[in-house]
Image (cartoon, helix red, strand yellow):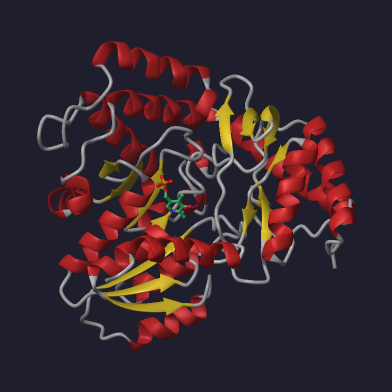
Length: 404
Ligand SMILES: *Cc1c(COP(=O)(O)O)cnc(C)c1O
């Protein structure tokens, strides 16, 4: 008979052998003290500084966001009470969708339980509904987009990362009569590079394709009022669908798409991941809305965020550490080996109270294993001093490669 227990144990042993077994740090985030947190480790609870949070602007502890969340819990209770169709559409969801659409300058928006579900549901629904659809996908697109495209069963062509010439080559091969969808991100979160959105939009228009842009690592942080990179480049109105998250810069949880009313209505009406799942708690929607409103009015937070990222890159370079080129707030530092990457991360946490998760294959290609720092407006100069000193010590102790 098949040994089920053995099978699962072997699958885990395989990961451990390859150095790919994931160990989660058990944290206590501390509202009001971010990026400080407590870490539950074998020898007790230790204070640490978080350097790899996706709460990019610290909005997870913003006073107005917390107040909105508290008030909504007192007013509406804990849960939403159903799927959107069956008693689960609260006033908060509707207002949030209206203001997301307003932020992106679109007719409509649709909210999901997470950004992952937003991508999975929207791409699988659109790709499956359009007859004989071809999807053209950037090779570095996020797992949630890949799963959505795969689930749609539409034909797929993959273009080289951020490469308009290759995209055009593939578009030119497509039958002009078939519906086409070009999918890509604005900020890619592992390298911190930014896609040539305007070029992709021009090509999509030339070949009659729709565009689907994941702005998860940009909304709240780039563009006027935090509307994203497409808005910054002045091409947001030419993107068919903008997708975003409420979990990263907005500091709460949830995902969404924004686009034409009919398109959002189609995903609302046909998308399983939207229809058959309980809507987010009203307090979550209220908190996300408060965060969106706050960030619309606070350019200085975006300026400070960019200044912090530039400052960290400058200091790493000055210290001879191999900071990888990045056009955004993401600051990757190359290690180039999975075991050393994990060892460096462990040494930083245990010896210096600095928490940065190692990023290994399959998240990034083998040989490019790295530490990925996300400095926030709340990381001070003193935090950076301690970080650089710790990295210099760990680099020396482990014999890691310096900057080329
Ligand atoms: C994190 C992420 C998502 C998923 O968003 P969640 O709200 O965390 O589910 C989607 N796309 C990209 C590029 C991401 O990095």
